[in-house]
Each structure stands twice: as C-alpha cells, then as structure tokens.
Length: 441
Ligand code: GLU
Image (cartoon, rainbow, N blue to C red; front, side, top):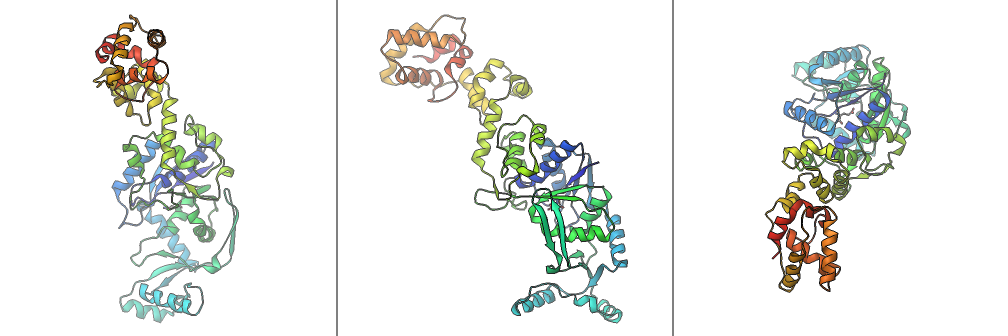
C-alpha cells in the first residue's frame, strides 16, 4: 500500500510554494490508490502555533485535498524518545556540551586553516569524568547523530540517481539541550511508524535525505523512495517565505481566486505539462508524471495566474456555478452565459451584472445624438432574442451611413456607459426594451 505525507511546520501561513508538495503528494496518492497523511511538524514549540496548524487544514481543504490521517508531532514525543534511546544504546547518538560560541570559534579556526567547517567530534573523546564535570558546571548536552561518513546513494523519482556524501557533513544535532527534537529524527521515526513508502518534498531537502537514510538504517526501518521537486520562486527567482506571509494561500482565497487555478499554478509551473484549465485535481493527477517536472527553476507568474483563473471561469457551465450565482442573487443562465467571458475573478460578475440591472450612466457624445435618436426609433419590438442586436444594427446601417466602430461604439457607450464589456448581442435581451429606451437619449 502506497502512503505519502505532506509535512508542513505550522510556523506561519502556507504559501503557494508550500502548496506544491502538498498537491504533488496528493496526486501521487490519487494515481496509486494510496494513503495521504497530513503531518504537522510542530516540534518547534516556540514558533509553531495551533492557529497556524488549523489554518493549514483550512487552506488544504480549500485546495481540494482531503487527508486520510492527521498527526501532530507534538503528540508523538514518546515515539521519538524511544528512538533516541535506541540510537544512544547503539552508540549512534552522543552527547555534546559545546556552546554556540565555542562551535562558532572552531568553525572560524577551521576556515582560517582552509579546512571545511565540519564538527570535529571532540565530544566523542570526552571521558565519563569529563562529562560529569561539565554537567556539574550546569551544562546540559545536546545530542548528535554519528554519521557513517560515506556516499549515500538513492534513486530519486524526479532527479534520478543521487549521491550525498555524509563524510562532508557535520554530525547533525537531533536533540536540543532542553530535550526537544529538531526536525530530522521525528520525521524519520514518523515515516517508519506510519508506513510512508514515498517521500515527496522540495529539493532543499536532498542533503537531509542523505542523513535521514542513515537514520532509517540505524533504526532498522525501511528506507522510503524519495522524490525531490524543484522549488517554486517568485518572478525574480526568490523563494517564498512563510514567515513574511508572502503569496499565502489564504490571501489568494480572500482575493477571490479559484482553488483550482492556484493548484494548477502551484504544481504545473516548472513542468512540461502546460498551464491550462484542467477539469479537476483528479484530471491533473492522471496526467502529471514525475518525469515532467523540470530540473530547472519554477517561476510563479501572477499574470499567468490571472489568465488561467479567467479561462477556468469562462469554461464553467451554469450548473457548475449555480450555487455561487444564487448566493449573489444572479442565478440566471442567460446572464451567466452573457457575462462569464468577461470575468477574471468570479466576484467580478456582480459589477458586470450592473450593466443589465443598472444603474448605468449612459455616455453620449454630442455628435452621436442624432444617430442615437434614430437608433431609438428603430429599436425592434419585443420579444427579444440574440438575433435582435443584428436586426437592429442592420436597420441602422441602412438608415444612416454608419458602419463598423462609428455604428457600434455609440450604442455600447449609451447602453452600458463603457467602451468594453460583454457582447451586446447577448446583453440586449437581458437588458430589455424598456431599459434600453431609458438609456438612449
Ligand atoms: N517540515 C519539513 C518542511 O516543511 C518537512 C520536510 C519533509 O517533507 O520531510 O520542510
């Protein structure tokens, strides 16, 4: 059974870059009939909050993802403690007493000598007496994982064969001085405990994967298959920040974008599958293959989002939007069909509907007064259909010498008060003869 997880840390509102792994995992689960776990990486008690975690759930549901299971790392400490004790017993986790200052000095010294600033494992040489003395001084240990220091090789489903040489890395700190856990160990413990078969995450985690594969092996767990995707950036190539709250999913929702538009932009930017109005998340899941994810950057373009959002709306049937139209008192199929091509966001319909229901401030140029008076006289009797506009303007063409823009624009300006907008052919029967007469001078 395939199982994936999306593991956000609830330290801010998720942004469109975070939506990428959220959805790529979900697509993978969908395609393979797998299970989707939402894992809150909330071991950093100082920065994680329940509000942010709840917000992530709301955002994920809005995007259309339903998880099969929700776990919070803050509730699973006993599992991490057990794993910590096993690693200590196996000699893979060792106590260190250096302060940040000491480590900083050592790193500087190493650099000055032209050596890589890797932790020198001095703590491994401490005797029992040394440790007792340090603890008597009031020092508390943090704990480092003893890396094998070897090339760790894995087959990445997106990036192909990868090698991370743990010999060039510092032994990672897994447990802080206060006993709390950094991300690295709980993630592995949970992946083992929850039977995660595929870890799909950003390529900023590739070197973590080297470390974590060693931890999986040290704990006797099955190493999952990894897939590291390119990260979404802004148009300038900068990453998004949860802390700064830039391009957050909540903001996009509140700005009135379609969740599907956000999902498509979040996942298909930087892939060879084109950004198009796909029918649903399932539709994308069925088409998007890891081989289509580019190895280069994925730049998010807000203008492309607007275009896509508009195209999604233009393709929506009346049935699809009926509840939303009813909510704004505009549940009329002809109205939807007449106006939808002008929408960039759904709520724009309220403004456009004013062209039908009024009030409209007619715009009449002095030189068009006579022409518009003729137009008024020639306005066909009701009932009106979408043929009426053609009949009327043909009659006007015959009665005046106007054609093209000088014929159409004064009519549009008088009837709608603006230069652009929905096709008058569809608009006219909705406006009706009486309102048209009111708007013509
Ligand atoms: N909490 C980690 C992050 O947000 C999870 C990484 C992972 O998927 O293992 O980057």
